[in-house]
Image 1 (cartoon, rainbow, N blue to C red):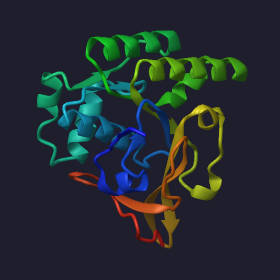
Image 2 (image 1 turned 180 degrees about the horizontal axis):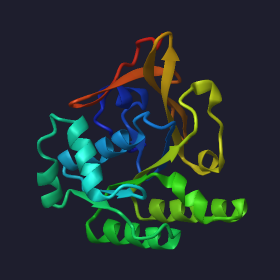
Image 3 (image 1 turned 135 degrees about the horizontal axis):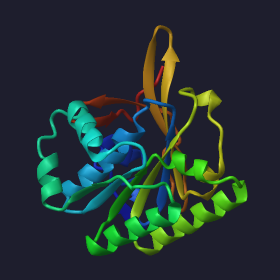
Length: 228
């Protein structure tokens, strides 16, 4: 199976080389667990490889995204240059219409030969549907379109809890090719960041809860270490 690496060493080891190519992956977690940061790093690392990527933000505008990324990843001095060179695209759609979102994705993937895409946060798309069945059908059609365009895509989803035991599954997890959960676990008087690959269709992965931290150089995933 051909894979798309994160170029985050510990995470790629968990995935035995990276994400299955052309699959769609749900990145799930509570507020502040690092979903947007992981999504942007996926685009950034691909850009460094010469693979163009598009980061579609359904919540924040481009200026806010860039400000947050530069403030967090202080050692990344080349974000602006990668944007100028057409390796990173940041898009804030004018509406939450799924058909319009599909058009934006298709145009960027075709026009700019996009290999990687992120939709952050896909959770807000739920609010545009009154019927659960219609939402599920529409999301399945969107993911099918993305896969057909030969793009490997991350979709972030906001969950109300930081804790592992309080995570619940919803329609997004059932239709996704893969699921990576991020946690901010309470341990005594401090919180510990951790992640786990819950599902990765068609391939094996490490089935462990793994600690990670967010540094100025990117996410650092400590496979083989205990969370507590």
